[in-house]
Length: 181
Image (cartoon, rainbow, N blue to C red; front, side, top):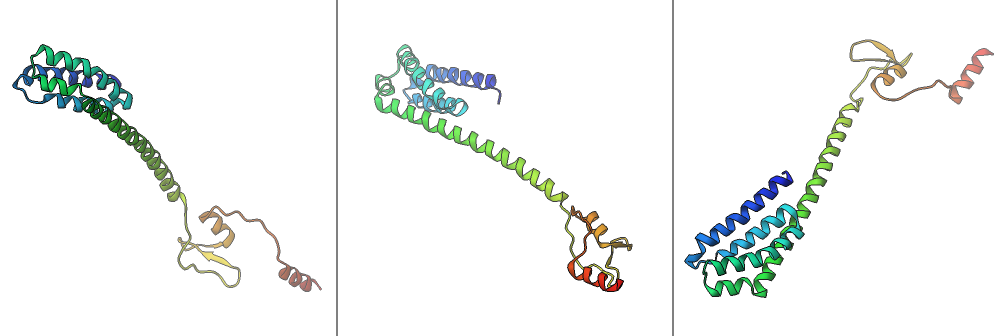
């Protein structure tokens, strides 16, 4: 989500909070608890510091709202108690940390998905030779899938990434030496 859109949502939430305090709180219901939701929302969108800043911003704003709207003094006193402020800060820190972990996990999942896609693409390129193949007992040619006899080195070069060079083993050297004599 765009940062400007997030900021607009937070500002709308703050405005909605004060509208609720203005028009619904005079019924003496504890609507100040919505401030916790507002702090949590800011912490979720922007992180721990935004949640703590929202907590510090809501303390004087809530005081102003409760005093100017003639709300019960017991609610007003509670919103400034260290316990309630600690709950607000705890909500900000907890949701901010949860957001940070969620963002980190999301990035790791993206990297993992890209790696998985790369591995799947590479795996599709790997060709495996399997099954039973006909091999000539005399010249060692192999019968390919199209029914054509090919030298085994050419067949393996086509089907795999193997490269071959020519050489002669010690047993064959002695056989060729004996043929010449």
